[in-house]
Image (tube, rainbow over all chains, first blue to last red; front, side, top):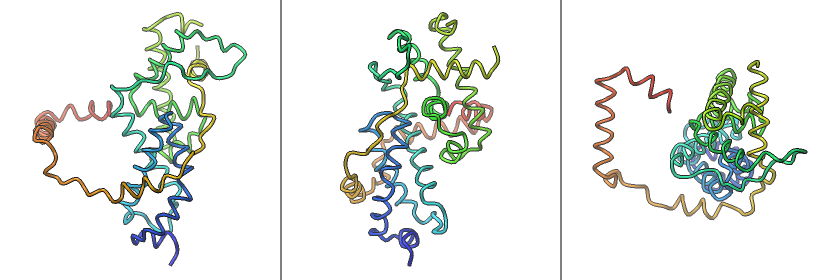
Length: 175
Length: 77
């Protein structure tokens, strides 16, 4: 019996093998969304717990990697929804290396605030598409939506960000 | 300013404020944590507090009597 078939049948050893094969990749993907290593570790475990719980739904001839990534994306999105009111991006996020890394701390704070106030599903695609520069196709596969919907959400996220920034401090967008 | 230019400008602003993840390496094996979670007993349904059930009933009733709020709800979810 193949590994994926054994996993789908509930074999814990097969699950352990799959866990060890994919934990790093799932963790790295979730980290890109939540940006906190501790939370990303917890969500990686939560992801694999869901994977094991819903193993009967997995078709052994399917793509385990894509399935795991989709479940991980959903777990991260659930986290963004629940943590929305409780946490904010840390103030001391590293500034991207650029010749004019002198976007003032205050301006960065405003951008962070505006970004954090985006609805989670828009924050997810904006983070992956605009900051992490993942492909629209990759995001679509991971989020279980169409590529065109990813584009629409990125567009809307940009529009919302711009509107929020304009209301917070007009000169940020007038740069 | 075109939509493309706006997107590009916003992308630059965002990337200056939120740097891409550089180090996404997992530092430890999560299998022991996974095993602990698998061994946890499932939460019995009667452990859900009564006010959660009341809230769910209220939400269900609101959706039933005011179906017009469903699209708005989907938009915000």
